[in-house]
Image 1 (cartoon, helix red, strand yellow):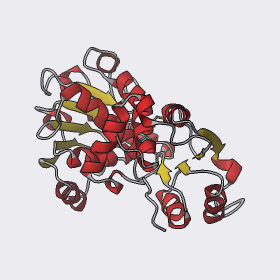
Image 2: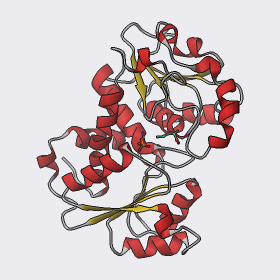
Image 3: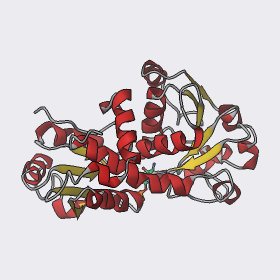
Image 4: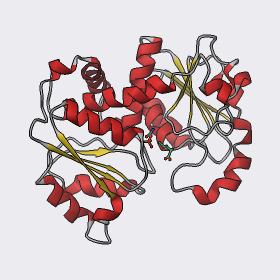
Length: 302
Ligand code: CP
Ligand code: NVA
């Protein structure tokens, strides 16, 4: 089926991301009401604050009606198959969005869906978050090509999508990850091939952030990894973003975190609540980016 899905940032080209960014910052009245009388299904297998709230409001702003469903209500592959859920919902809705444990569920949905499937976070990626992150960095740093972005901590779902988006923006990418939690050599080469100005990985947070214009981190324990908490607390002990880490970045560097945050674990309160932090703007931009993405998928052009 010739339907555009958004499972990963790389489902869009650099030019298309630029279009989505322009739609995200446009006055809502300029977008029309492309979802008027239309539904957007939102299935969540995991908890959410930002993703649910921002997507629901973005749908409303475009004239549509969001329907939130908990994962256990549809019971993927327990109550009925992923394919049956998708085919049925595609008859009611113009977009189906889902937050899932296994990325393969989204791939199976997109294989049978006659409407766009949107990833609301999987174990593999979090592309809607990355759109908001790029929007925030563009607003804060201006043109992103040749600017330097650092990721400190786990090379996880959020990191993968962020780094893909930053590569498409032509940024220098610097990863600071504990051994065993970083990107593989193949992954580093893949990111470089997307258009990054450069890609480097270090096993020191301070080296990774040196010269960075934006410093990102995320929880050390993602949803679904709770059993690994004790080990991860030890393995990530040297990767907390504190004032001494931020001092290695550019003086004007901003701090970003997708949230929810764990103060005193991956970031100190001094940093996340300090003057360099942009986490609230970043979270608010989730709604604008979601609106831009939905408008793009509905064929809105400016
Ligand atoms: N950043 C993010 O996706 O937050 P939620 O888990 O609250 O949606
Ligand atoms: N990496 C985190 C992001 C939460 C928004 C997780 O997957 O739990």
